Amino acid sequence: MEIPGYVQAVLEALEAAGHEAWCVGGCVRDALLGREPGDWDVTTSARPEETLAVFPTQGEPTGLKHGTVTVKTPGGPVEVTTYRIDGTYRDHRRPDSVIFTASLEADLSRRDFTVNAMAANLRGAFRDPFGGREDLRQGILRCVGDPDRRFQEDALRILRGLRFSASLGFSLEPGTAAALRRNRKLLGEVAPERIQVEFFKLLPGKAAAQVLRTYPEVFGVFWPELLAMVGFDQRNRHHCYDVWEHTLHALAAAPEDPVLRCTMLLHDVGKPASFTLDKQGVGHFYGHPAVSRELAEGMLRRLRCGTDFRETVVRLVEWHDRDIPRTDKAIRRALRILGEEDLRRLIQVKRADNRGQAPEYWGRQEELDKAESILDRLLAEDACFSLKQLAVKGGDLLALGLAGPAVGETLEALLERVIDGALPNERGALLKYVQRIRTAKGGKKGT
Ligand code: ATP
Ligand code: MG
Image (cartoon, rainbow, N blue to C red):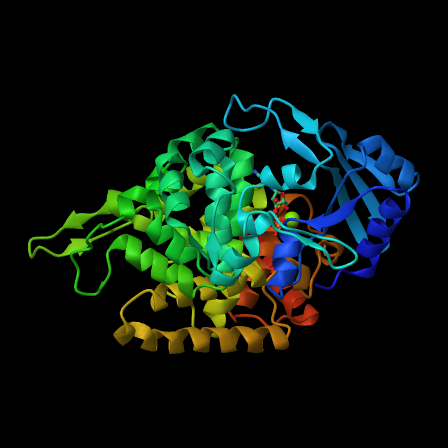
């Protein structure tokens, strides 16, 4: 296992001061998997104040109560936490207290899963008291200790288990899986912000669809709206899957990105509530994007998602079923409303939605290719689709004698005409048009 230089320096400094120091948790797991660890955590026998004494200038007491000192290094911050065990848990969320200990093994035993409970030091020593390395080799997630107890101590571990399963593609050891299901209701007592963090790390995972398919009732604890989709027969020969299966196929086909994956998860959540059956016994879902949008809005608010994230997702949900624009004019209009980033996302959403249908419909991808190539060309040509790009500015109109709200209104009208192709985006032509209109209006007033 290769420990980066800046982390080695932290371990060396702690050892030089007579303390034990080990890399621990996610970084050891990821390094053994040959993945780039997101961050390197260090666990040490040093008490927090002793750690601060080793790093008098670089150390910051970020979580002293839990024994954590963040050491700022040129390579990035390293969290150094004192060996600790957790006190009793009364609320299924946080330990009532933490107790520092002199034993690395005790510290490893408080960790959630065996693959997260391994430590490695500078000299290549390795501690793995719960068989994490073997579980890693077999692709298994297993609680450290009794799974019921561990999920009851901290119910967030339920979602963490599914998160690691989705991102690593591991399966849950049967005892861990059964306890996870049994204790799922406890997730209801976890702060929505913590659920949000784990859930949006789960969605981009390569096995996210499979995890959602296997454990819908767990996600239903915080998003019961999802459960209405499970097994919902669309009664329509254009759909080979029920609503939930279609959703999962579409989700799996979307890029590994939280916005796109979340949009796919929610795009049809309004279908069950919009279902109607016609005289021929065929199912329809008229107006479902608006219902999905409404539900998605509430679901994302409940998890305390950021405003930008929420607004982007609900907009994509609302737009997902519209025909994709395939002419210059229509693409410019869509660009004006959505902007480049969201229009590109919408194309991805429509691609994924289509991939979630039976293969005989996949030919639709060509329409999306066409939309994308028009979009690329328009952007390469610097096509005008916003006021910022319009060849005439407010100042030009003031100089012509316009004032007040007429300035903004005229700019909007000009943009509209440029987007529709009725006027070129050229200053001279646009100003001439403004003058002509004003004369015409002035003439009318005079008569
Ligand atoms: P990531 O790749 O997302 O950083 P990670 O495993 O490093 O994954 P963190 O949330 O950074 O996860 O936590 C670091 C380590 O702390 C974990 O590997 C695990 O050993 C321990 N840990 C974190 N949260 C819990 C928890 N709720 N219960 C028990 N142990 C936990
Ligand atoms: Mg981590």
